Image (cartoon, rainbow, N blue to C red; front, side):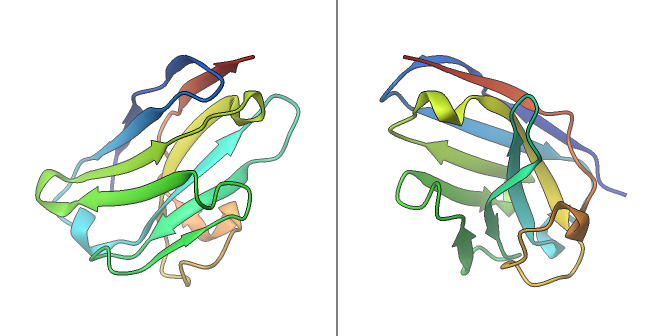
Length: 125
């Protein structure tokens, strides 16, 4: 079992940047592909980005491509999401999750397991 804890959220102005972290427990973090999702009030959970186990393959939703960068440090059991040029529409709770062996191109939350509790990101206009 893997436990995930997100951090790094907060309040930022339009055009600003934040880096989210996802700390994973367990020694098998490096075996898993990982992903980031977000959920705004009244909306469905939205896929953002994913990364394979050794970080040599990444995949992004069109809505964040070119602005967000996913990365990982297996030696630190940590996943990251660098977010640049933030917009008010990026306001949401952000979650990391473990891909359950499906291709990293899947965007379905149902193909992920072991979710963190989320971290709030608010972008002011």
